[in-house]
Length: 295
Image (cartoon, rainbow, N blue to C red; front, side, top):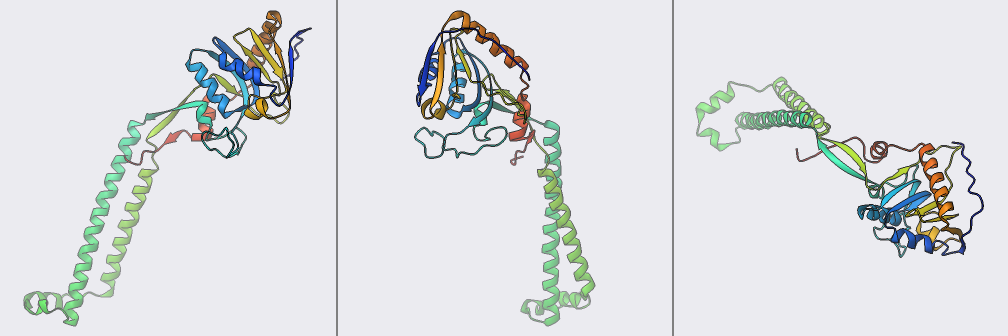
């Protein structure tokens, strides 16, 4: 993505220091109409703040590359996330960026219930066979060894068991049937659990777009425009460390003509930059389908 924009001569306030972004943060909090943002890294706190501003009716537009979580144990931590990153951000904080909606899959739910019912019927048959086989085996063993006194009071029953020997082939066949039934029932239950019951749909919580990452293309620009009246340029990202800890630089511009030129440039960059679709981000973190184990 090649791009070149000439802003011309501008006047503004220059801030350098560990709190160079103090005015920038204050401007975001006081925004009433619109926020335009380009920041390679955006902090979890400020992602939540932008989402809140959007809920208040402020139009939020912008680009970012990664979400940065606060270090565990820091005074600013609200949710206690560890400092872990990957190529798209953080799973634990990406929910601040998108909203997940679960849409039931009626056909899959019916299929899942049917297979689970079949599995339960087979398990019932299996239990019946196991109990019956075990009872027959005990009865046969008692009759053969003449160890049960109760059999002596029922000679007719003893005669039946004596006349019906239980060879090893019968035992092995019974065990084989039980094993096969158990395997089939277990496989049906496993297959039923693997049938998804909901499909995930995603929508953005805040109108920020996540930039696709390329080895030879990194959007390093930091630009914030609030209410189309004031703009901030500098080295700092919209993160807690960028605004409050790191030694950074920030230029505050309020000249109407310069702000409008910056707004034009910001929109051009947003239009030219290839970003992830919201469903791609959601699929990356959460997948496409879910499972309701209660069904």
